[in-house]
Amino acid sequence: GGTVVVDEGTLFVSFICAAGALPEVQPYPDPILHWSAEVYDEAIKACGVDSFNVQANDYCIGDRKFGGNAQSISGKRWLHHTSVLWDYEPERMSLLRMPTRQPGYRAKRTHEDFVRGLGDTLSSHDEFSTALVEAVRRR
Image (cartoon, rainbow, N blue to C red):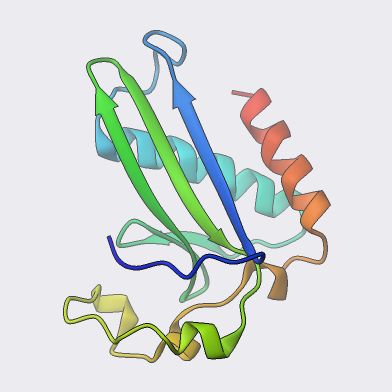
């Protein structure tokens, strides 16, 4: 992973799963990412947007990253964490260096051209939060 600018425009979402709580999700990185991506896709669609996708383990709207992920797996228990960029100050983002290792879809774009706050796409933080909780409940 990389460096994250954290401020009042950042949301932290963590799923902590006990052994056997979601038997259909094997405790390995790809199945966990797939499960969590389905949750985000459902929540974002409930907010009226149909362009969510996963690129190089990042959550994106179109080709713009809004979320980075991290996982911890211990036996059959796991944690999946997402730092969601809801909004940001461009001058704070400019503090980040251009990473030497980049996913191909970044295409050497600057931070300003690569990331996009989810709040630029969705109209309501509360609506998104509620939709995310509801998407998890349905699983």
